[in-house]
Image 1 (cartoon, one colour):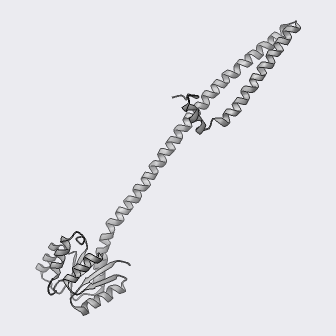
Image 2 (tube, helix red, strand yellow):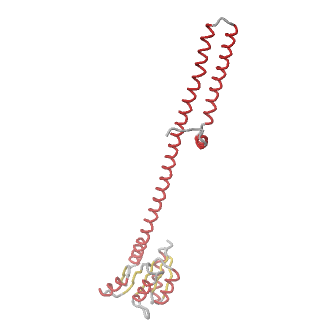
Image 3 (cartoon, helix red, strand yellow):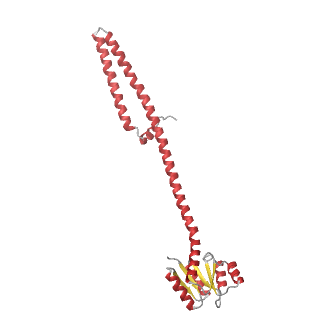
Length: 244
């Protein structure tokens, strides 16, 4: 545990005992033996929590807490009072000043450790909630991007399918013209008796067959050419007009 605890206690032996107890629980401990030194360390070290004695000469615990709460650098640090005073008025005064907990002396090590852990957990919980919220926000943003990307891919696929259909319809029409001419040439070839006419219709057949072969080759080339990327380029230059 890397939490830093500031102990403000004027009785040196008590301060040492508290330091040992918390060190054994893996807290990082800094100590002060009067209120002024405690305020200085609180501002300089920014501890995660302060354990402060109430009855101290000079600057007592109440004055220390009041000063902490007036300083923006220390106002949010949790403070646990340690005192032998158990009067209700003392407890009320501590809570009104903003103390987070109040432990009466003498106390068991377990009581102090438990009180500290509870306060630290309350500090960490909002941070954890914020972290979880941020993680969920990032996940939702990523999911939204993926949905938008997939939606765009779906739209592109539909446009490409429309383009394929348009090209296919055009090719079918173009393929039909040579076939009609071929069919007509075959019919006339059967009817003619003239060698000259026969040669003319044979030439037509050869030409139309060549056209048909060229168109079939164009279909193969278009299958390679008409990728989503190329289709966008062709569309940009108005070489393809997808159905809307």
